[in-house]
Every structure is written in structure tokens, then in C-alpha cells.
Image (cartoon, rainbow, N blue to C red; front, side, top):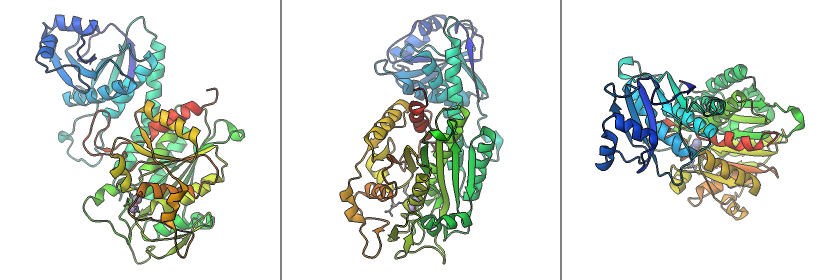
Length: 497
Ligand code: BES
Ligand code: MN
Ligand code: ZN
């Protein structure tokens, strides 16, 4: 979908479908004039409470020759008080679904937000549209049953407004959403397609195209490095593991990079500690952390962000087999620490500990890992926030703020040393799982043992990586969570800011 900025008066702009946002209980001068031409239909709907401007409401009106546009789609922005970029993104997500359902193939959206600066408003509108329009149809073979994609949208800015600013906003959204959409694709692809080798190939292709570097380590190299955790988990699978090292270093090697680490379990059956069958199909999304790292590199490279980045992405399946790792096994990790396996379903931390240790070799200024790590996270926070665990206050603050700005919100939980009591092993340095209490925290505590003194944040995205219902700019399936959050965070770390 292409977004184009046009300077035009919406009352004169000829198009098939004009999209206009409305705050709750308000009729803007533009909507008032459109309503006058349409004979008062909008005011009447407001009276009947059919369309009040509440967030996410939409209503479609036909022109019948009374306006320059053939039809008008009004979308609710919610209350004016407290309106932010996220309000625009969500409204445009709802609107673009309705646009897509019309099968018109495009629309013109009026950018007349006075609550958000123009560039940011244009970025939010483009972003909401690009993400709301997304759908994963690769395996639907009957084209007749599909809604065609929206080919393009025009963003209408007032003739006297700064068109360049709006264009910069749209370009920013386009680069960002390319990363989010790729992350969603990777998550939505089924486990039999998105194998470790396949994900590595997709990352390599993106790297070639966008000019960042991607090194793919195969099993022998993983073994050579001594990544015992990753090797142990991969042993039960016929698919060999991979470990990606991504680098985007526009500042050369004088500046310490930010390291990003993402859990890439392409299917998590639980292994020998096998999961119950019901709902297991969702475990194809257990590589959402990996997808977020790859998507962030795509966005950062597309946008030419002046920040050094290193990514480490361990990829494997977790399956039961005669060669699979077992409860009771002791695994030696790359860091040299030994782990007694008590549950093979706690596999994420076993591959992340090696990836985190490897990331340290790049002497990063900060490490951020993302992982669909624990069911307990979903229990604690549901689907509205990712859990954040931090070893550094400044880094936690920066990420929290990026979460508020991007709409990918974070809620912090503690990782106090005391939780380590639950992870004590009789025969090794630690166990790989604690008891039933504080499951997300003990998982984070485990990871913390592998990051030394480097400022570190762990994001548990088990609740946010997958959307069940489909809302605003978040259609059903993989959400691509993490990409917009990290890009927002990295903006603040770009040179010159
Ligand atoms: N990938 C799962 C976590 C998960 C569960 C993500 C549900 C999304 C939805 C992870 O590998 C896992 O199985 N964790 C275990 C840990 C336990 C064995 C200590 C869990 O949460 O049950
Ligand atoms: Mn598991
Ligand atoms: Zn898992």
C-alpha cells in the first residue's frame, strides 16, 4: 500500500472515498460543511447516538452528487481531551478496515488534527493505515473470497500547511511499517514453512536489500562457540538450528552498539515435557522475539537511523524425540554456567542465555531481549502490556517512555536476587525453571545471570505478540510487537539527539 501526501481542500478534492476523523461530541468546521451539503445526516445520526465520534466508530455516507467525493467515511477519534498520536493510529486502523471492505482499492484521508503536530499526525495516520490494512492471505487459494488489498491512500493536507513535514512523517511510517509487516509475516507463517533455515534466509535477503549485515551460523559454528543451551534444545528436532548475527553500524566501531536479542523458537511443543494439545498450534508464534529483532533492523536500515545496532537471534524448534534433551539433563552454557533441566518447556531461556552471552562479546552499551517467554506473563498482564525487567533504571525509563509513545506499552516487574532461591539446583549452578510462583520473574532472573554488568532489559511479549480478535491497527494474528517500541527507543539514542 502506497501513501501519498497531497495539498488539497477536502471540499473540492475529487475522489471515490473521503475519510474524515471526528472527536466525540464535536462537529469540526469541515464536518459541519460536509453535513450541510449532505442534508444534515451526520447531525441526525449524532442525535440518535448512531455516530457520536467514539473511538473506533465508523459510518459511511453516500454523496449522491452533493460533495466532491463520491462517499464519506467518518471515523471516531474519541475524546479530544487526552488525544495523542495513538488515537489517530487506532482510528485509522479501524477506518482502513472499512475502506478495505468497500473494495474501492483506495481513499483520501483528511489530515486536520490540531492536537498532534503535522509531521507526527501524518506519521500516525500512515502507520494506522499501513498496519490496519495488513492481512496474511498467503495460504488462501480462493481469491474470490478475499478482500483485495488497499492499493494506495492519499493524505490530504491543507493547501497552506507544510507538505514537506507531512511527507517526512509518511516516509518515517513507511520504513517503520515495512519492519512491522515483515515481523508479522514471519510470525504468521506456519512452523513447517518458517523453519530456522527459512527465517535465516529471509533475514539474509532483507540484509542484502537494505544494506545491513547478516551472518548465519549453522550447527557446527554454534557448537564451536559452545552454545550448549541452543544445541540442547535443538537436539529433538530434525530441523538444524541457526544463530543470526545482524549488524547495522552507520557510526563505525567507535560507538558501542545497542544489542538486540530475540527468542526464535519456530515451534514450541514443550519437548519431552510436552504441552497439552489444545491451543498448541499457537506455539508457531514462539519466534516473535526473533521476528521483532529482524523487523527492527529492517526499519532502522530503511530509515537510515544513525545508531549502531547488533542483533543476535537463536533459532530452533523444541520437539520431543529420542535424541531430545530431557528433564534431569545438565547442560553447560556458552558462559560456562551449568543448568539442570527440570522442564524442557522452559526452552526459551536455554537458547537466550547463549545469545545474551554472545551479545556481550560486542561490548554493547545496552542489551534488550524480547521473548514470548512465559505463560505466566499472559496471566499477569493479559494482552495490553509486555512485561519489562531491567537491571538499569535509565534504560528502563527510556523504554517505558518509548512504550507510551508508540502504543506498545510496558509494565515493569521486579528481578530481585531473592527470586534466585527458587532456581537453586542440587547438582548444577541453577535449574532452568522454578515452581509455580512468579514464573515470569524467575525466567527473567535466569536471563539476568548471563548479562554481567551491561545495562539490560528483558521484555516478555508472551501476551502481546499475538492478537486473538483483531482490533484497530492490529489485525488477527502476529502483531509485530517490539518493532515500533524499539524504533521509538532508538530514535532517542540516535546521534545528535
Ligand atoms: N513459549 C512458552 C511461553 C508461552 C506460553 C508463550 C503461552 C505464549 C503463550 C514458553 O516456552 C514456555 O513454555 N514457558 C513455560 C515455562 C515453565 C515450564 C517454567 C510456561 O510458561 O509454562
Ligand atoms: Mn516452552
Ligand atoms: Zn517457548
